[in-house]
Amino acid sequence: AALNVAFERAKGDVVITMDADLQDSPEEIPPLYRMIKEDGYDLVSGWKKKRFDPLGKTLPSKLFNRTVRWVSGIKLHDFNCGLKAYKNQVVKSIEVYGDMHRYIPVIAQNAGFRNIGERVVQHQARKYGTSKYGFMRVFNGFLDLATVSFLGKFGKRPMHFLGTAGTILSILGLLILIGFTIGKLAWNYSINDRPLFYLGILLLIIGTQLFVAGFVAELVARSSETRNQYLIADEEGIES
View 1 (spheres, rainbow, N blue to C red):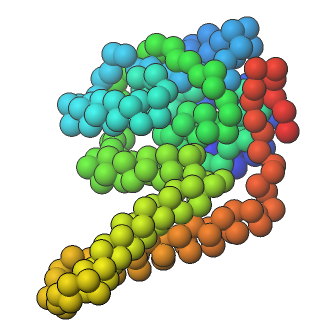
View 2 (cartoon, rainbow, N blue to C red; view 1 turned 30 degrees about the vertical axis):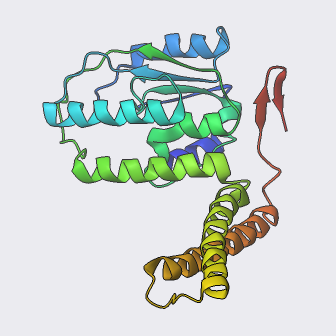
């Protein structure tokens, strides 16, 4: 929430975030700034290549980062690093809530900003306080990743996901019921004791519900007042 408010109020051409636990070095700011201004990156993420954290934090972090790389296709080694630099257009085009701060590169990519890089930064041992990182944060992180991935791919076209799934299930259920109907009419065999018959009914009902849910979600998405207010980055620059 604090990041989101800060992003709304930030006015500089380059916006830099860093953790307040004294593990990040302010000397890293000028190189990150130059990568945005001179090298043309939209976002640059720090990479704590050499870390001074306990094994209970580093191992889950490696698993988490590997999973996010695989799902998002963004080749970053440390999505959790709080030391990042952004173009102003990036922070004005994204919304950060909950624990979504760790997925800012993914959210930025979904908003059309593809030029994302990273830089190895110095990491220092924690002197004060204790880490809040634990199993529940890892578990919730994967749930958030599923949310970000779904919204990025289908947030503006939910019918493509729900409608497709509903259509497939409905067709399968309908084919099963047609087969039983033909069998009943042609050979007069009993269908009441056939589990497959009830599976066909279930598939048809669930498929219809998913299709209707996708249709309603599409209406909601298209009636949103902000659906056309996203910045999209292309090869020629930033367009509204």
